[in-house]
Image 1 (cartoon, rainbow, N blue to C red):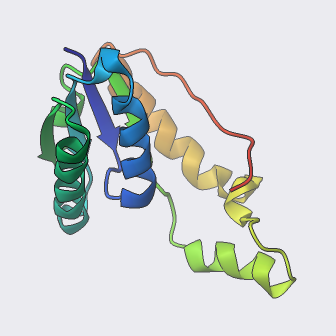
Image 2: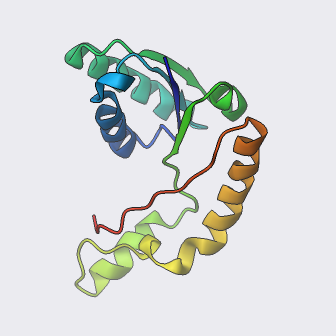
Amino acid sequence: MPKITLIGAGSFGFGRRLLADVLSFPELSESRISLMDIDEQKLALVEALTNKLLRDTGVDATIEVTSDRKSALDGADYVLTTIRVGDDYDLDKGIPLKYGHFGYFVTESTRHMSEYVPYFRKRRDIMEKFSLQPSSSTSPKRR
């Protein structure tokens, strides 16, 4: 049974949909899911939503929650990261809306590279320590 770690699980909108997609594969339906976030209140909410998802779908996955990244990564076969770096979310939404553009976010530009690159470099080192093979996937699709 594979262990799938979701770093930044408190992003419950994105994280919940991602987990539903992952667990829709029969090969992953009995996985051990490690939900990790630094915000324990959001983590508790995501744990409750994930348990409801498992009940509603009949999937037999095991859920563990933690705010400790190292324990979340320990033994992980897959690591998914759904974090947001920086505090400018309202600004990111507000600038395009101010000029009549809906659905475009500044975060899809290079503005955040100075925040995201150091963050993921640090996480890459941690993943390599645990013998995980880091890879990256991005979606060019506008949301």
